[in-house]
Length: 145
Image 1: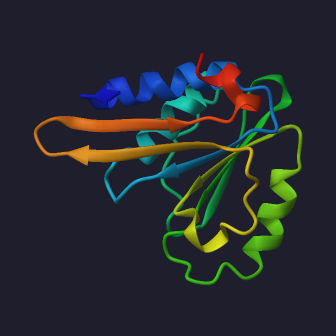
Image 2: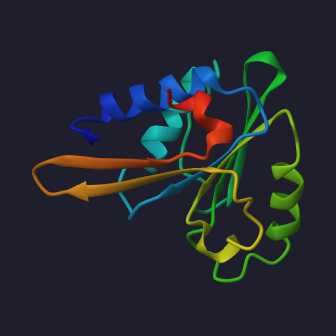
């Protein structure tokens, strides 16, 4: 699908966010400026989170409390070539049934990520917006139907 504006990217995130139940892992793949944080901002709205959502590039992760006792755990591994202790923290977050885990720049922790995760590829197309491709395992089909 083609996303033309930041509002459309937020809307996509919000639509998916409304369907989240907890225990979902979402990997966002895209270059700097592709729209990963914009998508996450929308997803947070779908979880009834009203905090200012920013990219955790320098802090590595941010946690937000949402509806129904769910926690959004947003990780950004852009600055880490070796995740070290973050591997342990991420492993714990992934098995938390009340957590929704968003991961940006997951290449360095791919061995920790479960196969059953939603992968959203965002590619910037000059003068055309963003091309978004969603790889969704059957287990998570309720997020994108």
